Image: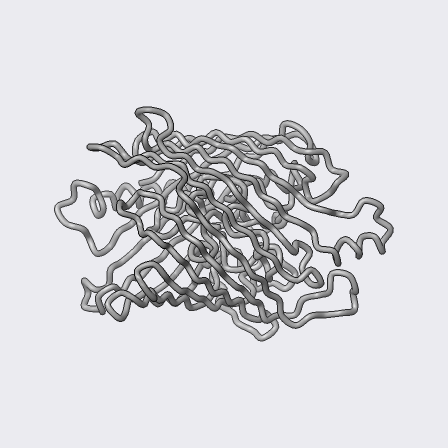
Length: 438
């Protein structure tokens, strides 16, 4: 999951569910405040390259953002408390066609500077992750890629250190929600090696997309099977993102998706109906959820996602359009090797519902993660009288856009059965997130 406010021109996704991460002894490469200040300085220096009033577009653009949030567990969970998170991101994109390369060849580089504490690990104990910007506190390389277009733009190819969460299983309308489950889906992140190629760890890989018709697109990607390069899931190992290791024991992660858009958008910001069908696979070995001595070679699952505009009103003059859009996504995978064998999300996104505030967004979402039968049986075999069952997260927020470069987002979440435990008290979480771009 990448940050939900990523500045790159890609389909937004929010990041993914992740386990609690221990804080290792490794010190950051730069002081946290100094890293954020360096990113801000780069952005200010680069502003003339991509400003709205620039006489002509530059082949090199530099941009950045800083996101800060405070989430408070007011009731339930492990205990009451508040956690601060900060995330700085800097992006550089170069159109190599200006240097004589093939038309459509683009180089991209991005880095992250995270800071703060993890509300899920310290206070909440949930399964899906209440914050989608939680990561190990270490400045790191985020993405490094080279992309090109072929066959008159119908085919695109990208290689390098890549992210899959911004390409696959994406629902645009859920991008403003905080919970990780609305980004990189739980039915993938919980059942691959170290959550797969998504925020905040990219992986060596290749991605290709083919536009089969004006309404139908196919895409597929193959990636390194372990983004941490750590069989034990230690996020402090190679935390700077500079590890480029491949091995047979890590396996490979592959994913493919068919995207149908019956009626393409007539305007850039207009919502469109879409249906996505996908399949994913991982070639590493996975332990059986019930029998400790048993091992399964490979893992995988299927999923479907869709969005449907329920109401829309075209913009007039300099006022953006208004719309109400529904989204939904669900996936399943084998319960004999996956603890979370099914997960689903659904919700609504309304834009411009307040007169005079056309850029604001109201988002509502419901996320479900269910524990498979094999994992539940294993708990019963160990004498657990109330085995894990499911976690349900309900979220609502409102994104105030104060100009084009600053947003303020108050958020409220209710978590039923945190950690999928029927014995854990339901949690109430409220928070505030701000983000500035440059």
